Length: 122
Image (cartoon, rainbow, N blue to C red):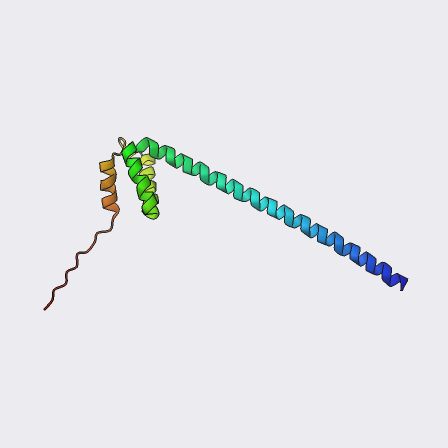
C-alpha cells in the first residue's frame, strides 16, 4: 500500500508539471498571437497613412471631401476609386491635381450604365 501511495504522489506530481507546462505554452502562444495582431494592425495603419498622403497630393480639398463622403455612404466604391486614383498617380498618368469636377466625371464612368426599361400597356 505504501508503494501505491508513493506512485500516486509521483503520478500527481507528473500531472501537475505537465499541466504547468501546457499552461506556459498556451500563455506563450497567446502572447505571440497578440504580437502578430499588433504588428498586423500597425502595418495596416501605416498603409492607410501612406494612402492618405498620396490622396492629399493628388486631390484638391473639395475632391477629397467628396471622396470621404462617398466612402461613408458607399465604402466599396470609395475604396475602388481610391485604388484607381493611387494607381494612376503611381504610374505617372496624372498631370495635375484632380478637381471635384474631374472626380465627378470619374465616378460617372465607374457607375454601370443603367438600362432604361419602359412598360407599355395594351
